[in-house]
Image 1 (cartoon, helix red, strand yellow):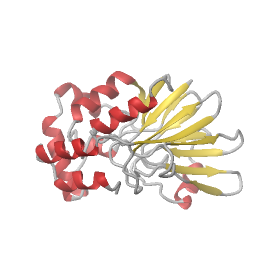
Image 2 (tube, helix red, strand yellow):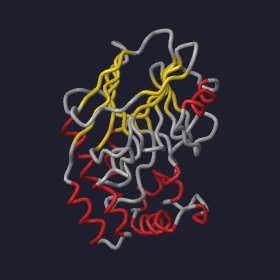
Image 3 (cartoon, rainbow, N blue to C red):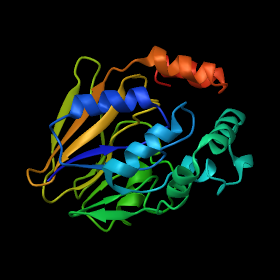
Image 4 (tube, helix red, strand yellow):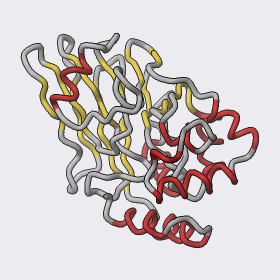
Length: 246
């Protein structure tokens, strides 16, 4: 089975559509590591794609915030404003779908799906030290997670934890073989709001039978996404940051 694995879409329809074009014909099932909404200008269109297309989905912190399940005092003013804006515009059906998304981990075909870490769905796994603790909680040898908006992840080679670097600027794809004795925490990066300095939309393809992960990046119409954010009254900072991937 070949999987398209996406995370942190954040209501960015232009980025999502570019990912789908880029990945067309190279996957059988789609899976999402959470944060469908928040920040971007197209929450309903993005949620509807996930509802209709994704086999397995776990919730993210913005999914909770944008459906009234999270205390927004914990959010910074920009994220809080975007959450309120989204809550007011999600259709009833889409809001109900997002509100009922399950907490990770979820399991599929020998791997697991998380938003943050297996210890806490809101934890950010950004270092090998974070990942070393997380590996002790995994129930499968391969796990996919999001939340940090940083493409890459971590490998446990039975002696130490190593950091996986993202695809470089001079390529749109980086292949990695899954070794049968090692453990993997794989972050596809963010479709809708990358924060690793590369503004291209990020995702992964996973061939479960062949044991191969493809880290992918694709350019999208950033200017259209920015214009929608500004025109619809969201904080301009959310548009500005799309140009730099920060």
